[in-house]
Length: 597
Image 1 (spheres, rainbow, N blue to C red):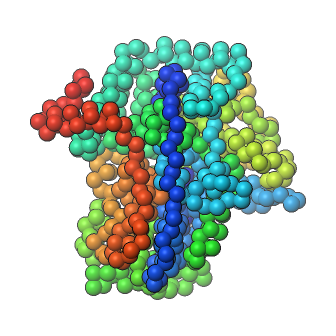
Image 2 (image 1 turned 135 degrees about the vertical axis):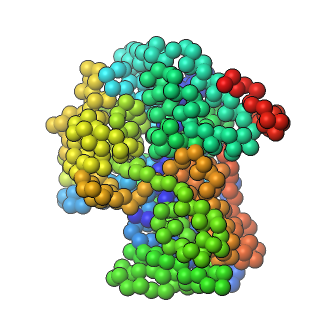
Image 3 (image 1 turned 180 degrees about the horizontal axis):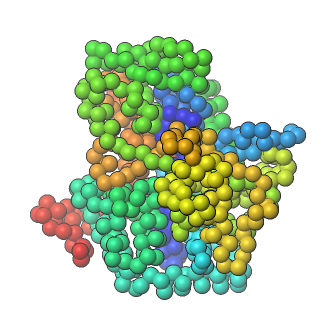
């Protein structure tokens, strides 16, 4: 998989939206989405060469923007184009004329708070689609919090103009039971306190966010320590572990709050590209990555897959060459006018010498950025499970599981006719966010388990969350097979490794994220660790950082091509007024006007 730390990590966002979405459903409000501006490439000029190092979402985005502006682009990717975002074939799973079963690093999730990634998707042609691969996005109508030993909380996802699911009386009874159950377990004073904390963050000026809230763990900000177990599980741990894959005790309030705020606006239909939850209508490569690569090839982009970046050579204040290992293991020197490094931070920083870090202290600060494990497993089933039609979050599961049954969201696909051996009819795609807590079956952490034990443990935790209120959703007899992300190796040994870790957001992370432009004039950084408006390692962050890198390159190259648009997160005018008031208070050393402590 690729050198873009982008792909699947976006699925973290879906949890953040749930509470906001529920609130908006109760209010029944919303407004339409804004149309995106069309891209019109300018005329090409004398071609300058660019080596894009990494072919994940960041690298492909950079290649796309550069190719449209007349640059000669070559993408070097060590494993597979699409990086963490790609789907992949399950080995030896196809029979007859079918394709192999579809596997993935983790499920896709493309919320309406994203603007830059959807703009790119609209510019990737797809047969029969007026808006390119963007038209392959589908919006699930609901999501759920699956409680263990209690009724699950099912939430419709509001969106202007959308018809709610036709609910049976049984569905409504279950939803009501769940809601009341949760309401009774969250004392009124806790709900009121949490709402107040949300308002404090919402009305905090940027300086207070960057300083105070970036240095405050979310656990402390929402005062989880003195609250009920349910409060801790849902509003502290559930949110941070599943979204930022960071422990609540460490996660930056700035990061968690910024995402929560964006989802609230999205659920209220404000400044959004579309509904709060969207996924693709087919496996990712079919619906998005393969058409993208084909389009870039038509624009003249060259791809070198199986080529691994080993080091950037540095001399005279510039990158002089890139040392890359080809698929045969032979080291080659690659030279270009410009280098866009679109690799995940833990892979990129290994290629920087002490001299480079001295030339740009931003590169040295990247050593302080932290990554953790968040990895997917797919279960193939011989009957469709009676699950929520959308994402579910097992908030009581020790391994912080989230998942979605995919076949029902792929209307153009006949799963058993198109994939595998004709027996499997659905793919239950599950993300494991917590790898260091003991499970319920073996009492071991995910890292201590073998691959087989991980699959059995995840299955047991799913059943504990989904089969617990008299409804058998998952049956052992209907489990066909499973597929665990191949990037994870050495499980059950003292030294497990993960090729595809995820940038996490403990307090202080924001100040160590580099900008896309570096002090080395021909080196530009792209990837979801680069500092952009969406302060979370996501596909949107990868895409926005690639646009910022291309803009810095255009400036450096003296190009007359128009810069890429980089659209920030939505800011509500009424909230901006309150934030201006708070800035005055902040500079006077006063706390936020709503902050009751």
